[in-house]
Image (cartoon, rainbow, N blue to C red):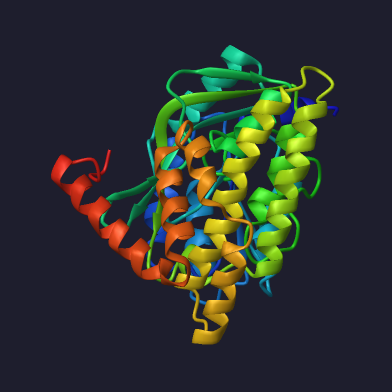
Length: 353
């Protein structure tokens, strides 16, 4: 993709999509500006806000010449907003950030240095899921040391969870994203738009540092918008296509055994447990909830726990709970979470890094 002289002067384009973010938006804009360098730009897409966001953004843009604002009168959803932001992105690389999360102020510098060191078109760091008080709930893809993935190894890492489909802990080379990578979905558009894209690349670089903290707040999209069964099935199909890309990658195909092991992890994490988890959290009537749990149990086998143990102990424990408890899984899982949280509090592992 050709680059003009003006485009080459911008290093990182940060894209922020917002809709009625409330009074914390001003703080988030300050945090983003404090994270970006002098050669970086911030593009904010106001996706039909009606809470006074426009005035906050206009005031911020007047103070920051490297910030631009795109306003959409009627909300089209976060995928459309991100695609719109990309139309203005002039940077060498793109960072998609969410206003209500937390991150290490060094994240952009560390990720960009990883790109310089590796030459990879996608660079990712570790992330975790936190509650609103900063307590860690889950790790969201980590490695023990800097890792350069090549060929089919990328698809394997997507499937086994080292390279999750989240956007906010990554820098993407602008040219690999194309014009509108994110499909118009209410949920999981980030995974749908990035997984196969990354699996086709020649290289990807993973950093071990946990530099991004995805915050699960009451009322946030991750707590009030639940994926449909159709969306979860589409995610499963994407995972199967990623597995095919890993097996047949033209640069360096992954071994069939490695792909199958990773695909097993993906199926349980992103299908069986995702369906069961949605059944617990979504506002479903009792009969529909039981229907969802029956779907979650279809094809789930206790004997799969042993091979899962070799790769992910916590995933194996959750699968064991699902396959042995059946329709009682919600109560069993809540008990498991309570015990796990108590153990983490006792050890100090759930504190904010």
